[in-house]
Image 1 (cartoon, rainbow, N blue to C red):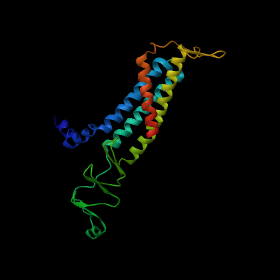
Image 2 (cartoon, rainbow, N blue to C red):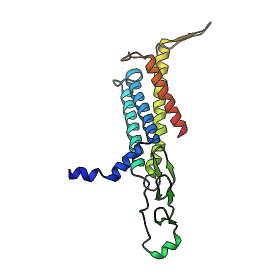
Image 3 (cartoon, helix red, strand yellow):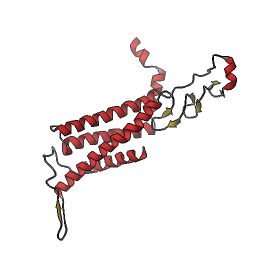
Image 4 (cartoon, helix red, strand yellow):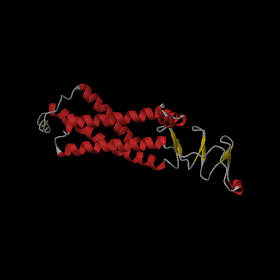
Length: 219
């Protein structure tokens, strides 16, 4: 009981509440949809695990997901680093060179700014990001930058999987014929899929492709 009481504190519950915001909800939904569909498309329709390339592809998809979530949650929960409320410099003579924050009732450290969203003074504040529902600052800047780098890379990998899945599955069944030209891609597939590529599967893959491409372009 004492162990639980030391972990479940008001501050911890307040940090968990950061997830209850449109930014994290949308971001985590995009990550979940893209990663899940990429894994499903790879295993069932495009690149099975019984091949070397399929196994490597699966491991890469898992690594992208883990690294993206690791940096995302650290950027959110580690936080930017807040100036303590009522903070004063150790040397009182240095106070004349610092700005005073009336909201926090303390002095601002160099390169710190007050965030109206967080209602705190933030060390080396860059901006308040709605996608992590927190500020980007001194302590979480590296995590936030890593997330911005990994997210488009992982989405690009997923987008390639989605495109190749739809390409191989659709062209396996469709031949486009003109007067003298006929394109038949039925020989592209080298293995039998675990289940047919149905209309719902196509719609889900196309939707995930839109999310992956949109994230890659936006980030």
